[in-house]
Image (cartoon, rainbow, N blue to C red):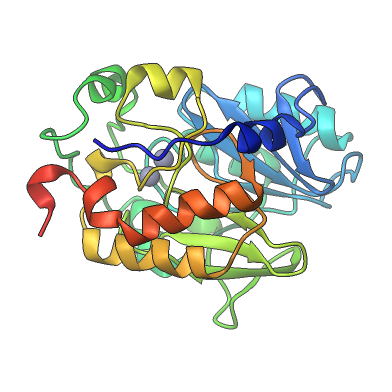
Length: 282
Ligand SMILES: [Zn+2]
Ligand SMILES: [Zn+2]
């Protein structure tokens, strides 16, 4: 697999992020921070010290991470560490792990694209992963695979049809299907911040080593769970065209600046070659 390396300039920019704030919660702009939990990121949208009901959790980590998310939220926002709502980029198992626990405990609504609802209302699990790609990490993740569908039906809502995002003023949701049918990205034009879910990611998730070390690299969506590569390519091209300044994705460290944009452009342009599994290339 061809990788798009980051330049040292990008690494210098990357190092400018405030990684020390709240231990492992990494703030990328004043009101957006994220925390890497094992292999996946959860994202906190809201200012430090905002208090209960004044921030939003984006995605809910792997199974078993409720305590870590709750603790990080309490440390950053104060109070009970309770958000206004939870917004899901998509419903893969590594993003919904603590969703039922936290949504019920916090008693908050959950917003997701309607195409993801069957995976959030107890109806069904995603199809099995494609075992012909990615090898190593799948074996590592298999103990986390769900044994029953996630069910937050009683508090589940569609994202608004006008593309606003509840409790996230100035943000818009952008449909970015391919990795899943109803995956969305979240975009704020004002400071060009992009939360991309797994539309593209900034680590090589098929590699156990890269997933653990989270070395920043620009990659297409995780191969083993992406069923629709044509849509996935269209989504990456759409996001590259936004010209983001800062991106945080489902996996890997946040990235920013012109070097990030160059890497994203290269991914968009050479998507078939660098992002798709060899046996899926047209
Ligand atoms: Zn995913
Ligand atoms: Zn993911």
